[in-house]
Image (cartoon, rainbow, N blue to C red; front, side, top):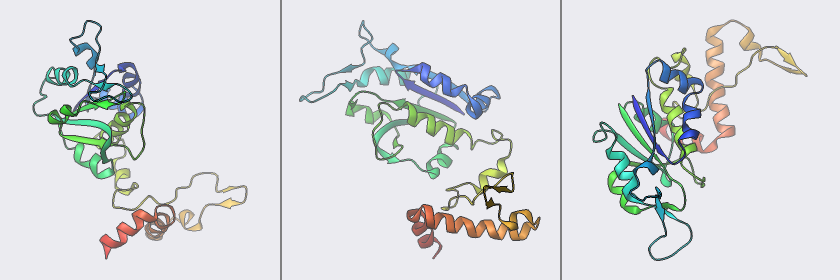
Length: 229
């Protein structure tokens, strides 16, 4: 997979992309990262990429031309899936990650300032938001999206079986996890997990997934019950 990230702060992206699982995926060739500073595609002698909004209003608006020029400079951009990270986009879920992990080429566009010139919409395929809140820019959203997608690529995780029981894979969150010591300040590990009986452990975990979802995420539980009905 190739991932291009268009940003005004390339150093922020480089640090994250060279760390942990994302960094290892790049080193092993599972992902080919390219960070693009779209300021370099400005026609302004001062590399300006924003201007005041037509009609007045607070803040500055990112210009369409430098971003489109940056997109068109990317090899294979015609067939890439182009994503704008924006608080106005559809809220990101695990289903998005699964779908995007099947793509060969992603182009992510990180915004700043007051927003984008609306004409940019004609050059993208999808607008995505992390949630119903506003960040200073799209870099954090891009990090989250990249990590959620890259970890799904075959061969990236050492134990791919762990993906099957993760939170949100089937509408439920994950069962409670425990490790050593078996007792801490009066809190003990459930006996069933120490029993060595794999069938009973599987039953306990399945039951706890439902209980945990009902307790912690009643919204997801309601959707799961409706789908399962």
